[in-house]
Image (cartoon, rainbow, N blue to C red; front, side, top):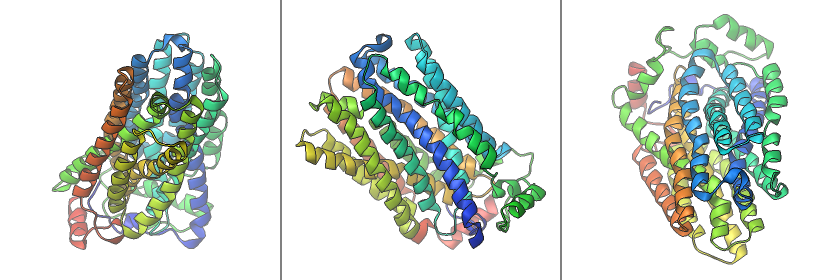
Length: 449
């Protein structure tokens, strides 16, 4: 991650490359949709599993079980970000999609909580690696000045997957309905993997950063586009850890740490709320049907929020929008702990979703936009991976509070996390319009990268 962009990473593909960008974003959108479905399905099925005591599950265990997947995501994100900068974006996307699909099959046939937890952990390895890799891929094909909007568009897939998970929760209400839901989560192996393998091109920027110019030219000729401008700061091919070291060079360490802390709080919110919203809302006095509907509504808000935040970020700066969005999240999450009339509650849930998910997405957009071709996947992967510590802690915290009958305190705790995220992103400096920093800092990056 760097505090300012270098001209090369933000160079626009030529106009006739628009169709290629649509192809890349479309295929990445598909696999991220399945990623979102797999992530949210646990929270959607949890009320049914607790009601029927599936596999002997109780609330205290449910929090730990939810953290298994997010712990796997932590490892997957930290590993995939660096590996992606070594071997390429496409291979990692294929591998991660296959891993979480097969792990869902293991969950579907699990005879015990131990096997189910193992399946969720393995799924997390794939889920954690997929998201930062697809963000990197679409960022490298994004037209000039549309990077945040493209990332926001991609992330709508995650919330669309959450909506589908909510509908699955409504449709699969029997004692073994959760098994059916996890079998449905195997579909990416049959649909997403073949399509990505056949049609998704490798990133031309990755090929050029690795000095594989002939492959990059062949790809450009195949899709009738021009090569992007060459990056001036490609590290030596054998120095595989240079991309990680670049995150801490000079004064960059402060910005890196602040984004990591913000990501910790942001993913604590995303995964804590996603896993426990239906259960916490039911504990707050709402019917089961309404509680599951809240999961659908909050993800609908997330889709709208991604598009609004992406467009605003490209105009005013993604760090600035992330700061405002986290502040809105704090207010919304706190209000969820207050029992209100059902129509008003739906409104608050929708607005909370509008801010919650896109706030975290704009952290990714900021980091991707401020990174170079040589270390972009590493920067996004590590900010996502460190954030996964929050993703592990969020479900665990929610489980402990629900087990103690403290649902209202759960919403307060999540609101505090949103306030902290607001402070951390604000301290990074919001930059000038478009999220860019002063030219002087750009020159400093060019010297140190």
